[in-house]
Every structure is written in C-alpha cells, then in structure tokens.
Image (tube, rainbow, N blue to C red; front, side, top):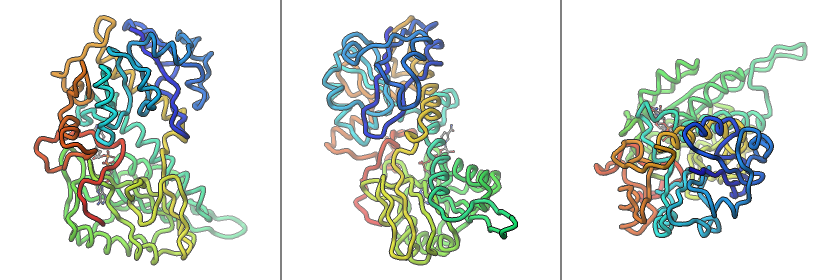
Length: 409
Ligand code: NAD
C-alpha cells in the first residue's frame, strides 16, 4: 500500500501529517510512504530527512495518480478533492459535522473518507490515535505563552534589587484537555492559577495541578455524555455569567477553553465582566470562532482591545504555531490509526470495529457514518444535539463550531 503525505495548503498551516520517524514504523506493515516535495518545511522537516527514513519524495500530481491512502492534517482543498480518484482513501481531521458537504463530495467521487475527529476517545485502545487530545494539549500550552507574551508584567513572583513583582493571577475557564494543559503551563511559569469547569469531576484534576478550583453557587453540575459538558439552559447560562464576572475581574489573565459538543461555544466573559477588569489584563479565547466564542467581541486570529484596555486575543489554530511538536504527536496518532486499519498490506475497512465505526465517514460511494448521514439528510451542517439518543457519545465535534441551538447568549 502506498500512503502519501501532502503539503497542507490552508493559510498559516505549518503541520505535516507524518514525521520521518513514523516511516520506519509503517514499512513493516507493508506501507510505503510517498511525501510531497516540501511537505514538512513548515515544521522544519526536510525532504532529505524523509528520504533518509525511506520515503519517496514526489510531486503532488504523482501522489494523486498513484497513492492508495492520502494522509492530511486538515481538510483537503477543493483543488485537491478534484484530483482524488475512486478507491483512494483520505485520512485526516476532516470535520465532517462542520462540513458534511465535503464528506458527501468525497463519497460521490468514490473516495473513502476517514476522520480522526470521530474517534471514540474514551476507548483506551484508541488513545494513541486521539488527535483531538494531542492537538488540544499543544493549543493549551501555546495559549499561555501567547498570554504571557502580551501581558505587561511577569508571570512569576520575582524578588530583585529593583523591587518585588507580584505573580500574575491567571484564570482558566474550561478544564478539559486544553484547559488542564494551560493550567499546568501557567503554573510552571510561576503564576497563581485558578480553574473552573461545569463538570464537577474536573475539580480534582485542577487541584492536582496546584491550582485553585472555583465553585459557583449558582450553577449545578453540567456533566453530559462521554465525559463532555452539556449545554446550559438560558437561566443557568445567565447565572454563570453573572457569578463568573466577579472572579474574572480579580484576574490579570484569563484563558477560555469551554466547548460543548455540536454547539457554539458558551459565552463566559460578557461585556459587563470585561468592564470590571483592570487595564492591562489579557484574555486568550480558545473558543473564538466566526459564530462567537467564550468572550464577547473575540474574533479568531485577531486581537481586540476594549475601551478600558483589555486585550482579547482570539486564538486561531494554535497547534499550527508549534508545528514540530504538534506534527510529532499527530504523526503518532495517524500512524496508529493507519496501522489499526491495515491488514495484509492493504486498508481493511470494517465498520463493525468500534474505532472504525467512529472514523470511517464515507466508503464505496456511500456516507457510512450515521451522524453525518443524518446531517446530510436534514440538509444542513448541524451537529447532533447532545440530548439526541441516537448521537454517539464520541460524536464528531471538534473540527469547528455549529450553531444548532438558534439561541443567543
Ligand atoms: P471540550 O473541548 O469539549 O471542552 C472543554 C471544556 O469546556 C470541558 O472540560 C467542558 O466541561 C468545559 N465546558 C463546557 N461548557 C462549559 C461552561 N459553560 N462553563 C465552563 N466550562 C465549560 O472537552 P475536551 O477537552 O475534549 O475534554 C472533555 C472531557 O473528555 C474531559 O473530561 C476529558 O478529560 C475527557 N477526555 C477523555 C479522554 C479519554 O478518556 N481518553 C480523552 C480526551 C478527553
């Protein structure tokens, strides 16, 4: 089987699907690797390094002509989709619940579409393949560095001949994978850190990292299915925003990571909360999206400065800004999945397997993933409602955001 790594084409995308180290591990399974010229450049991985590891360095045209499986980080561009042949497979983070039309186009072309963001994450044997987790880890780490870079003071307590600098007070809202990594990173930089989440289970995790857990009196547990949070009701949301505002005002740096599967990110930092913050405070909104994020007024890829001197940084593809670490991790994830799906040197599609049932979206000209098929049937790019009993707990959710609620925060 020929597996090929293409150069990513999205603006600012510096990751690459496989690193050279992976190639030696794939060969014993009968997988030969083709690498597009310059595919690893953004992560400082040279063509020579891939060739030394045993890959063939080829043009994009040769990949589309000869490869059996094409490995990507994000979705292939429309131009690349046009090059794909029936019987070829694409494996990447294809975000089929955000962009079911891509899945439909791939199915119509007879291309097998396999998306890592559909992995059943709580299955222990799937953990080496969990790209959502590996990339969220990188993002949580980088969010803190971005905040520290913008902040006008030190993160640690510093006692010098020129005086004593107090430590920064950092608040992390949402303590999932990215949030916990952000808490750990801010702690390692010496900040005084607090964390908050609607899932009570996160309290112990936050505290184990040396941070203080903030408990709100107005909001009860919002633990949902599969370890994720459920969406709050309008009343709960209002109460949460009001109570959080007081905590937010007491912090110098706020990092928000809150997400709810299949829903737009919850608004946690309102206009009133922003007004109560002190000039010089910095917020990094990891939920920033075109549909709104965790912070009023945040815009992905932009820094917005409020009238009272608060900088709101809308995070935009943070993993791509730490390209070698994120590519190393992603490469292990996608290699593990590829090896899992390979039998006798060929891709063996078997959706009776729990892992494959989550990741295989299209095969043999058909959309085989139920949640994506339902979406296409309904004719919209909606995520399944968390309360939908037919929605798998490991729903494909994280490639983007969809507003299915019709509500405004
Ligand atoms: P996520 O990206 O969906 O959400 C990030 C965090 O935001 C979550 O912790 C969520 O509870 C929180 N959140 C949602 N709405 C909120 C609100 N209104 N206010 C405050 N916080 C809110 O989550 P994730 O990082 O993908 O992880 C979700 C869970 O899955 C975690 O418990 C994580 O440990 C677990 N997980 C388990 C595995 C595994 O078992 N291998 C792998 C990955 C994640």
